Length: 414
Image 1 (cartoon, rainbow, N blue to C red):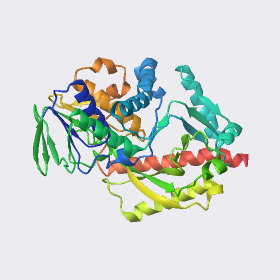
Image 2 (spheres, rainbow, N blue to C red; image 1 turned 60 degrees about the vertical axis):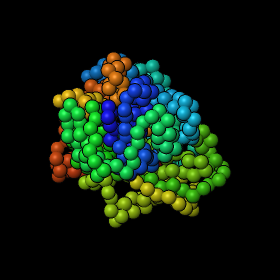
Image 3 (cartoon, rainbow, N blue to C red; image 1 turned 45 degrees about the vertical axis):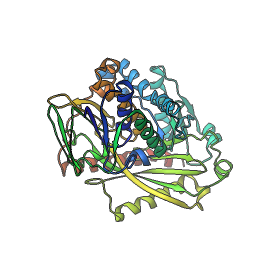
Image 4 (tube, rainbow, N blue to C red; image 1 turned 180 degrees about the vertical axis):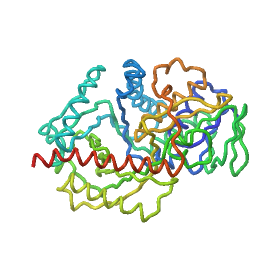
């Protein structure tokens, strides 16, 4: 085997697809413990987002920050092109995305962000309270920043479309094949219940499932946090009649512990909350209260929809690190273990980009990505448990405190 890819999510599928497109002679296999899209790739909120890492400009320079931003924005074009090339539909809607202010302090921060983006030649539209109310009628919203190049999609359809495309290109796919261990070497040895796999190179596409796995290295570069989603019953024309929302923008608010929301057909998807766990399983007694909190927050944001029922609820793991941005690259004594992880809630765009980057790294085409800060932003290992848990729990309470301070500006106006 030339390349074995661990994990059946966006990272591995995009990487495998591009490897075979560029080098049809390669023997490429994807190993997935459950089924394609089992993890976050199949059940995320479906928002294709991007972020400007201006905080890295002092280290990498503004050109690198601008280049990185443009590459992440370009993931939407990549998804659109793959849909057309391979004839699959993932309900891609290129309507844009809002960062939402819930109080005057948030709106001030939006204006500052807009000025920063303008410095990079990326003018964004600021919607004041009256302009936003004409688009989405909620008494809780104070304003927003519109990212016009963002998009939404149906995540499971995208994962299955990538699966179809990869198989069409000749990628071997083994579902129900968990990788139990990895032994590095000139030929990397992967152990599965069905036997051992030897490969000249391995791509680690596990992301949030990597920290709890037995696969080394890089298992200590991120943690798995749980995010939660509830979905309303079909609302028919009520979304538009009651809330407006004609442009179908998705949004997330500007709190540190924020909610993210988007229309899905004639329903509303409402997500948020986080929970730290040792591993990737959350017991029901910790999972169910999160959904009740989300429903209460939904009612606060949309009091005119308090009678709405919720028909679906689910959660899943998201990979975060201290800097809340991914790391990508190659490691190992023989430089044949490739990785991309730590998407921090923007996995649709970043995993799509990461798959392309890793394919080019393997094919010795690094020059194309030389300005990408994710390739050069080495992050130190996180401490072992229980110190990791203590650190992220402390950060959680700090974010709650900051959100409380911000919302004081709302109470002052009242």
